[in-house]
Length: 339
Figure (cartoon, rainbow, N blue to C red):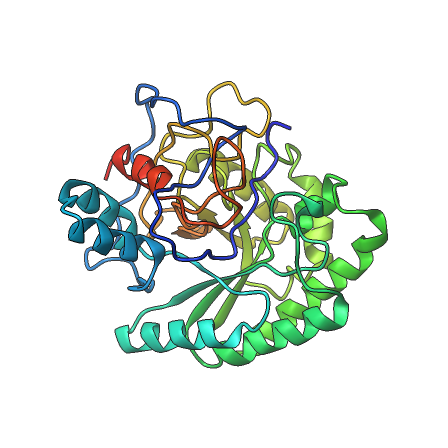
């Protein structure tokens, strides 16, 4: 339905196939609409953002592959993704190796690691990104291993995209609500036990839960009081201005809590006209503002690329499974970007 969030990616097999991720329904990508007036994205810090760029990302591997094939123009466009910091969506089996590799790289570069924890039981209500830990005990073990692997590394963790909004919209069965909120609250406590970890609980986007006040109580039950704030627009396409206004309303009711906004694919906003699964691999979209902690807004701690541009939202519009690398779609996002 319109305004629903997009499924998430758990990092995909590195295939050097041609793909891109973001958009509604099913079918081939349509031609890009004329560039609508959009607010100028904030500039990144002069020396780049403070966040770590993964040299082994799917986008980086695709750049290398295309360069080897003599596709230099396309490779250069894709550098708009490969040379930007993106969140690492941590594997749902053993989170340790991936986090330790990334933490080592970030530490050596003097950068901050951005991670997404996406393994809550009954994840995504059985939809495109269904899965998650087998139960409460498995999740506690997983988040403990996650936190242990992060250790003292400087890190930002976006905690469980969709988990709270799916309680609010009723997608997650009522029988699972209490356990989910308890697990999220415990996860916040466990992660904040690390001295250099910041935690942001996901709060959906303004097109999904139109009344943000419905999120405040469940966010606090999920541990918002101990978290650093909340995240908005993860894997979605809502404009920055809409996110800032929405976030400010939540913040006012949440004792001034700050927030981060996912700008990875919102450069041209959502798909005009909405429609069924308008959030799933929508055609004609573009990269948004580059990741930075210099937002110009005292409530917005950062603009982040939480969704990894080029990873599919699911098997809609001809896309691969959720989280799988889709080079063609990535190239489209990059080619329409304003920076």
